[in-house]
Length: 524
Image (cartoon, rainbow, N blue to C red; front, side, top):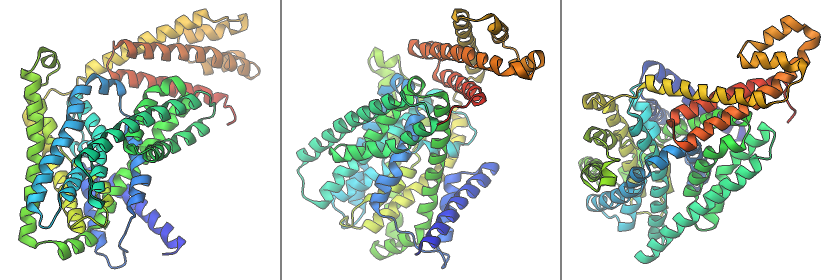
């Protein structure tokens, strides 16, 4: 395929992703399910070539930006507040799933090795919070459930892929269990250390950059750098990306400019949207090839139906068993755990949200050619993802039946207003500390009263005086915004407001500062 044809197919691929996602969003359907269906239908069109992607392209090109985009948008504060429950799900549940589903696969699939069964279980172990959100639509889940699901989805990707790497090593060569365990520990420790180191270095550099373009360029290469360094040092590149993203997302208000943070949010939301949805379309386009491979290596239609049903049952049962056992532990365990427990209904909601998505679709192509029944396992992973997406359509019905309390938007709005009042007062206090010349006093009075400064300045002083007045506004209002941001960050550290209020306040301050700087842009 020549360059022009390749570019044409890429453009068609992106346009299809955007159009399908936009259309199904208007009618309230699930975008992941629709994209898989569209891709699957298109794969049988004779003019459409069969897409083959190298595993390294998935591992090094798609997973790092996907994980980083999710990490920088995840609240480190919320994860630390619920770290015990998130770790139980993202580490404990993944390990439990790999063992139970691995043995189930070993019993159900003919001529498969233990390593291959565990590798397949690691592939289908991680859940996808984006897919859960897309399926649930506008149905509002309790804030705690959302935090747990998002934290689980982010960290269990790393856990599952570390387990997958260990299983792949066992497929390729003979390894001892102790060697696998040591490699696992080394991957985790080195991956976390690399992630922290990369996050710290990038934060240090960002604090010295005054150009949003340079800042954005740096963040675009950060996930790939973290991944490559982690892999080179025999650690988990995936975990390095996640830790670096969490660290940079938390440190951004201190080290990056408002313009850079606004650009970062928009850029990574766009990247995440394209990659998340493109992978669903991509797996659909592989349906023809996957089916052909499954028919060649599979045991037959009815036995395949039994195998699919057995694996899905083992997957669902293992998640419900672990989540319900965790819920029981929190409700009946030590006093410290009981204080942090959740209701049985919340446990059912978390257990029901076991939708598989992008990481499973990407990771299944990492299985090496030496894997027994590789094509058949890819087909089974495809079935698991599609079945979980379709089954996830029942999630809104389940949530309604559980009668879980919806987030109190009145309370959240009240918190945001109280926080902004506190921040505005900090800004006024800072304004009172600034030295103001007689010519700038009118500017200070207008800022103190939060008046419509630009129009009033032009009307009162005329065009000749507008530039000095606007320069004064830039200096004084920038000082106020700096004090307001500091007040919000201090409130975050003290834990006096929930994270949604903190994020909303920081974004509002960033938006105002970006608009203010646009009046006097500095060259990059």
